[in-house]
Length: 324
Length: 254
Image 1 (cartoon, one colour):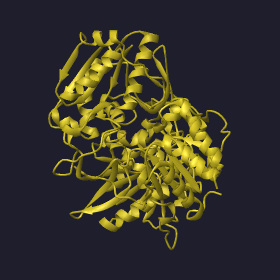
Image 2 (cartoon, each protein chain N blue to C red):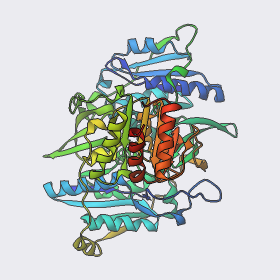
Image 3 (spheres, rainbow over the protein chains, first blue to last red):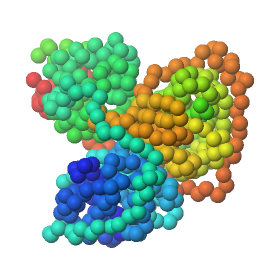
């Protein structure tokens, strides 16, 4: 059995669950194992019905009052019990911040392998190998989990497409599974989520974005990027380190912890292309990368690239745009 | 307050990857190394907590002999002493092996708080802090952007996706994984560098019999997903050609 752990909050499904279902269906093609989707939470009836549309053997609901709101102690206890009852060969999860918070604890408690941030599957000598980035995306590794099953695997957001998940001819059966969770043993006391500041800029609607990374070197140089953005009628954005340094406001950050964008044109200046950034912008139509490092991972997803000094190239682009 | 900070030494950002002959790991000897950036933020947060609440900051690192370089740097920035779990095999260890090595050396120290970066810039598992918490039997929180300690209780701001945050309270002792940008880093002063030479680095060995839970069967430069058109020539020529292509081919600018 391949077990997909769905993510939901307050009865709303996290869409990345469908990406993980698509990955599970590909893995099932390699191992011929049936798929079950596990839905943990306090009140997951409607999410379970939504997921029953997937071409899977069954949807298993794990409902317990102690699972909402999410805590790592609560989830680890519930999933340890549920995984023990289901006895899967693989447990697949989306590589969300929530998964990152509890999956290592769960795998450690069961003393089982956990392969994180996987982007693709391969068969190596008849066994599944999991493809993942390493060294900030400079290298890729094919990884085979070791030791007894279940093996836990998390999939990078956006690595599989939601619309690749196959639907069944009829809804899959939904089965409730009872688990034991001692609510008094939960040590973390979470408060409701909040947004720091109302986001004044909605970069997701921008048609063109000029985005700045570490290669801009210092705060004063942001002006060069702003001038290019102006010339191209584009919004200005940045990768995380630039916003961390306070050179641009946090609301202009693109990436897993910032905004997800899909403009017609995304022009990346001095951005190396760490995974955390790429997940926020790889839906862009046309990507231009300008970077002095020809091996920067950003060039893997760029349509057009210029390898060179952005401080020479950007003024030249501004001139070329204006001199039409 | 007795605070542990787990730091890792990773290849520098400028490092150009070179593979070993088996193509299963990098050529360590060719690489230059530095402190993992999120761990540097964890160290800074620990130093600030010590300045506020008193106590000591102990740097813990699991790695080969070369790791002494980042341990010295952490001591120069203000950590009080260090624990180095030394073993050549730790250079390419998975998260379970690294966590077991750290937990073994840390468990008798009875730290009030252990901090580490949210993930490393080399293997990028994002697992060690959480597995360490489980191994030490402690509660944890990940991707932390603010830390408050008040009479034995901990309250932290956890980053969620897409600009959302959440406060979480938990008892001490606990383990936190720290997000980059939580604070502004300090750098070592000459005085700090001199003082570091006299600070204690306790050597420890990893516990025996901890098997790796993952095996890299192949390591390679990523296959390109898209066919990138690289535009060459002088800056002026490349810029002109790019603008022409964006107008006429991609049709994304006026």
